[in-house]
Amino acid sequence: MTINTDSEEEALNIPPNTSSENLSEEDFPSANPDHSIPVKKDETMEVHHHPHVEKKSFKEYLLEGLMIFLAVSMGFAAESLREHIVNKERENIYMASFYQDLSNDQTDLPKLISNIMDQQIIPAKSLPRLFRKSTTNTEADSIYYFFRKLIRQQGLRGYITDRTFEQIKNAGEMRLITNKNISDSLIDYYKDIVYTEYLQQSLLGYKAKLWENLPLVLKSEDYSRSIDSLNSVYIAPAHSYLLSVDPVNVNRLLIQVEEIGALSLSIKKSIEKVLRRNGRIKKLIEEKYQVHKD
Image (cartoon, rainbow, N blue to C red):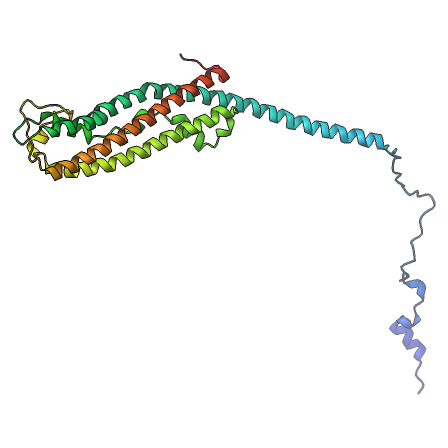
């Protein structure tokens, strides 16, 4: 029996073989990177043209550089001028304040000198003379009075106004004082004050030793009567008498009294030196900064 294959293929509608073996190159785009897509002839491509810039000459560059330099320099000059004006104003304020402080010192320090004379130098000169004629039976009112005065201390800081110096020193602005003579004089002035304070500290040591030895010759009840209710030294109505006039003890006391007197005299001279420098500085401030008394 013969089978008709042609009729069976038609009936099944089997498509023709479309495998890759039968495909042509025209069916795929080219893999070649040089292959370009054709551009329509009526399409135009936009082209950007850079504007033509004329080159500057060397003189123009030099002129621009000079203008920038002048602008920066003028800025620095303006800032420097402003700082100078501000510093000058602060300097004048400091000088007026220094002048006031010095005026206060000039008023107060003579009071301290007077107190040193009254409480230290005069008692130190008087006690040796009083002891030479004293016994346990003679009145010793003046001896108690002078010993009470001698052991007291007048602190220098209570008579010094140094607010401006401390302020300018802590702020690091001593450089604002442009007059070197005044600046150096002020520094020396406060150095003299520090030295005088050192002398006073040494004096306290001598007074402490004297106070420890007073019970060797003084009676405690008479000693306590030599000050009033306001803690002021005075001569009590009731007479006072010495506990002892032992030569060794009296001699020890008088040596310490002499040391106190001599050191007190040095302190007095140091304060007088401070006052002289004070006057010279005030005159300089008056001349250079036109600062005067109110």
